[in-house]
Image (cartoon, rainbow, N blue to C red; front, side):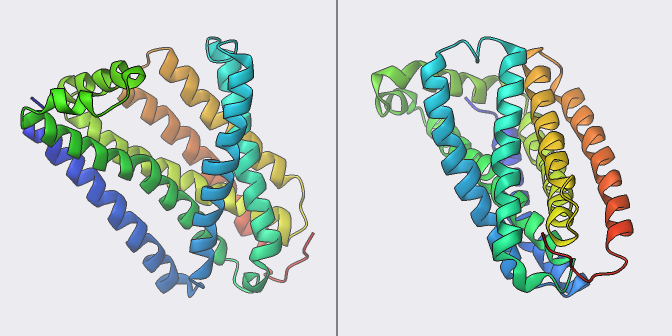
Length: 266
């Protein structure tokens, strides 16, 4: 049986992700008088560059390399970090250069863009996971575990059994931790968006590879910490501290570069 408290925590995390995706852009628009379209451009860029193009590359590269990359923690961290950084930051760069031209007048539009990128990722990764977890948990508690296993192909039964065991055995707070982790991720996406925005609007090209580096660093550290068996709470604290440092650096860049909002586009 899946704990009732665990199911409540799943529902709370799902509700938090939905509220974040709704109220964050509302707050940004109200405070900074931004346009709405940049939010949806951010959503679209994550969809195309992270969920489609990057995943296609993973299918090819990991298919060819077999387990050579995934079995080596450091190589996997380097590969995964660079892949995410290059694809997502390049998507940001292209979007800001070609799709955000009409929004250069208000530099705060980049905050809306970053919120769209981060919130859409939050829903696609954590939101959909919580929906699946709730459905699976209700099915398990209804005594229909065998039917759940019968519904998946034979080659996926072992994976599904692992999911079922995790839902039953995982501490309830772990499901809340997934929501807390998204706060860090959204903060990172907004910070990285500001760096790429600076590269494009202020013609400071160095901030584009810097955004790739920061993105790869965070994703690489995540892989290393996870595979090293670091406690989940400690892992999230480390990622939050690193992200906060990037955000502070980015805020300094923002204050320095956008005192004068006249663009000098690349």
